[in-house]
Amino acid sequence: MHYGWVIVAAGLVVGASGYGTYYAFTLFYTELVAEFGWSRTAVSGAMSLGMMAYGFFGLPMGWCVDRFGPRGTVLAGGLLFGTGTALGAWVDALWQLYALYGGVTAVGMGAAWAPLVATVSRWFEARRGLAIGITVLGGSIGVFLIAPLAEALIAMRGWREAYLWLGLLSGGLMMASALLLHRDPADRGLRPFGAGSEPAAPPQASAGAAPPPSPEGLRAIAGRFLFWHMSLAFGLWWFAGAIVYIQIAPFLAEKGFASGFAALALMLFGVGNCAGRIAMGLLSDRIGGAGAFRLSMLIAAVAMSGFALAEGQAGLLAAAFIVGFGFGGALPQLTTIGVALFGTASIGALMGAVLALVGLIGAAGPLASGLIYDEVQSYTPAFHLGAAVFLAALLLSYGLRR
Image (cartoon, rainbow, N blue to C red):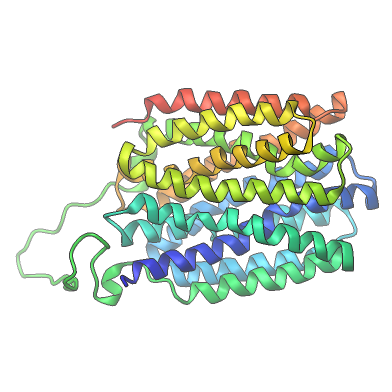
């Protein structure tokens, strides 16, 4: 077996541990509102701050993986993420929630995406879309596995102890998986998957030889309109998706459903996420990342409005799954489109920079939905807004070409 698939497996575990715990915030949402009496806008603001910080720190994390490699970068991220989550057990004031969830934990989350997809991109030439799709599958698998665990811990031990155990578990798994990561196939005497089986020879300098051409760096990439265009399209995708995974539990509570049903809906959202990432990762190898992204956005937009209008349990669960499928199907395309447009030379810094902008735009999603609820006492308009934003991302994607 090519070691690139070990890199994929390690990335999957890191993503499942980090994103599964991070997205479980929706199950703690009503607990925090009930215990402290904070407004929904105030609690949503912690998530918005976390998304901005997560995106912002994706840039230095991406640069670090280009410069120092993924192992140390992800080790540091796992330590910060686990510590920040575990300390949530002692939250007693709103500023502490913002400092932990929107600060320490979010910084650690910066190591759970850009360093992983950058590393996997270097390890694969053939089947890159599939490899990235499996790697980012960790986020949705994590939601599927950790949502019921978090719900059970909250029910049996309370939300504080639930935060403590989730922090220890997720941080430990992220750090253990980091030990398997290597920056380049040449580190193990290999070539990227699909590039041949003979080991890569280390580069040797020869006297009088001209230096190799310099790859396009992040500064040059950021000076191109195409970089900002891509970041805006994916920022809108993140804006709409964040409304779902943060407000799904309170929205179902608004409809009169118990927390157990909300956890089930969140699990199905995660299952749909899994299916979308794999299916669209495979499809992108055939029709390209932009085509797969457009199809994902169309599916997500239709299903999100359907979720807002559904009343019965079966309709709500089906809509949650389909929204997850469309939302998750777009994630592998962020890397496949980025590689197609800009190459792999500075892929870590590129993904980190795009993540920073995507996080900044997407952070407005939870905040906007919280403001809408406080204004009209319903999340239904927020879900319709998310569907419209998915369609806007679809339209923007038509300009993503060389």
